[in-house]
Length: 169
Image 1 (cartoon, rainbow, N blue to C red):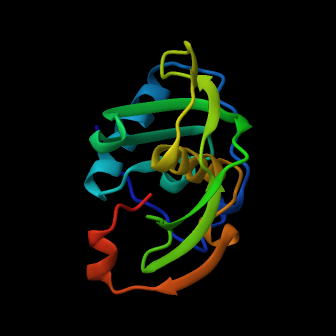
Image 2 (cartoon, rainbow, N blue to C red):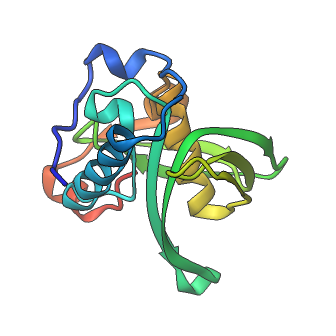
Image 3 (cartoon, rainbow, N blue to C red):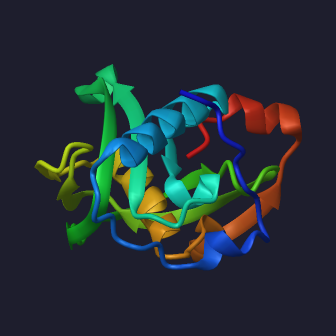
């Protein structure tokens, strides 16, 4: 495993629609392992392959909230897509490892249904809600060339110290 460089705006890969993964072989496994290590080192709670300059539809998410009954878990999802969203939305503050020093308030669906494949090609389906749903929406946006600042209703600069204290998506 290796920590990869996280690209930042205005890097063009962040604005491209990532390509679907066809091969679940060793290169994909290395990419996922590297993404997990990179996300944890950053630190962040999610990372999309374009953020490490790989234009493929792969995300990793690591999150849990015992108060909300969400066990701490690591997800690696290949070719994820959101197939349903709740009518209920909520506004939350997001940051991004590819947009350092900026946070913003973003309205997102409170609950979603995601389908795709796990790292070994087995079909994957889940229905996250709350903050976990927000993380998945944020990371899947990256695969479509969309940044949280495109959706933000308010954006502000923050000090590096404050940014380091936040759970960055």
